[in-house]
Image 1 (cartoon, rainbow, N blue to C red):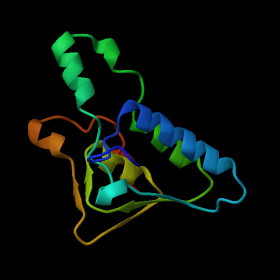
Image 2: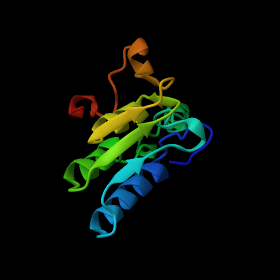
Image 3: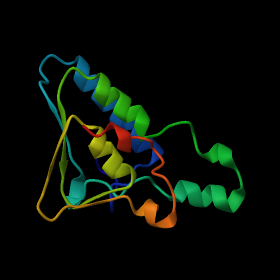
Image 4: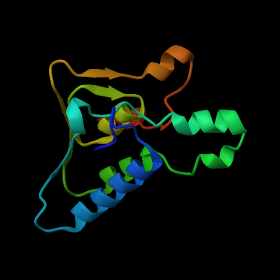
Length: 132
């Protein structure tokens, strides 16, 4: 993933991940998929600027019907193993994305967490339950 500075899961990134997973699943030369984040960070989670815009405008339609669940469904449906290689941050939706993969490996200093819990917010993508 590449969405500096923390590889936030913006809507275009989520759609691109789904597209790339589906594309790799169809290719015969791809035997496995490794999901990484650029710049020493896996993902800092959902792009909160979307929620800030909703709060400022009151326009809930700014939040499209898309989530990490869309990507995790592609992962779960894949016949090829998908591994999350976590370096740096894996927070919120980024951690949920990693948990949705078939396997995970993490660098010794990786930081994993669901910071929304400290605010009393349930993880928004609903994929914590999918960890295997």
